Length: 117
Image 1 (cartoon, rainbow, N blue to C red):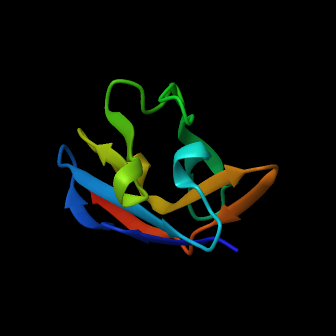
Image 2: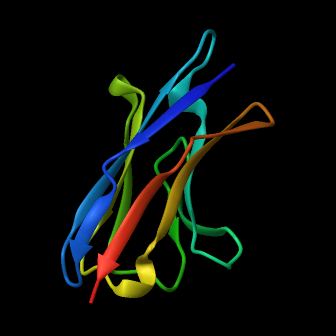
């Protein structure tokens, strides 16, 4: 079993920055071999993929966040990050991290990000 704990959300003004963290733990779980993703879900909308990073460090982003968000990972700390810059009100959502390992996926509990105009 894998446990994920997100942190770093909060209230920020438009144009500001936040860094989300996703700390992973679990027995017989190797974070460095896992794919890590960040999703978000705004009220009344479907959950959408924001960014992903493979075990090899390849990254991918939704068009809406390219150039503003950066996904990264620290395998030594079993932690993934989402650096969010130039935030916009439309970035307001609950952000979730997900890891995929050996065909199984696990979700965190989510962290609220609110961007005021």
